[in-house]
Length: 256
Ligand SMILES: [Zn+2]
Ligand SMILES: [Zn+2]
Image (cartoon, rainbow, N blue to C red; front, top):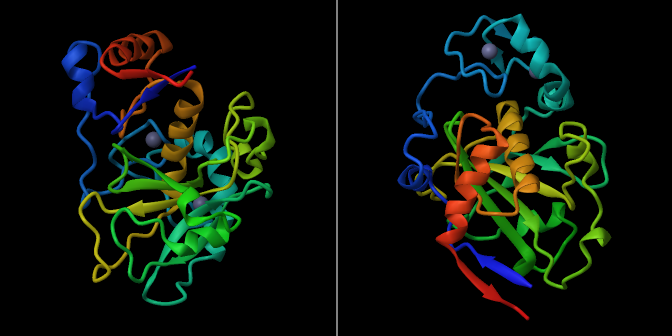
């Protein structure tokens, strides 16, 4: 069986080297930029509708409210109910338990947090696996002013993939043919180095669209994954073209 080695997720500039004409790459949102329409993919800058349920997400018009409603409603109430921070050294995270029907917001302690560490508190929510099995998937969607770090349990025992429970909490916002397995936690991190002195970033409801888009991409393509998520979903034929170029530039090893 051939296995590809991807030391770093790809950056969008790598795209441009191969196919400068194919993608119109829009600039990423800066940490201090005003929010854009919460309907993922719309990106309109002027907001006229605030969600009355959570007061966290804004939309450019009623069409975008309605389009986003099927996925936003899954976490809107949870955000409204879970806003109280338990102490200064906590950050809000979005928890997708495998055995529950909905994601929820949780508070994670971030004292002594060092960049790149797999913190102990993750294990509580991920079923207490050995620390070495907690892995991170990072990406920066260009519609968010922060990076998303997804913590999940990497299967070290080479269990048959079908033995890992399908994640029920994410199913409500994914296409039915797209299956994600195991619980995971999404955390917002600064694109810059974080220290324990800084106030930790809190994830909110606006991260759901980008997370869902990223997970769909992961499930659809077994090939290289991008660290900087493009703002648009490109037709499959365009992706395949990119992937073919990327495949050529990667190391392929045989595990046989
Ligand atoms: Zn809401
Ligand atoms: Zn919109």
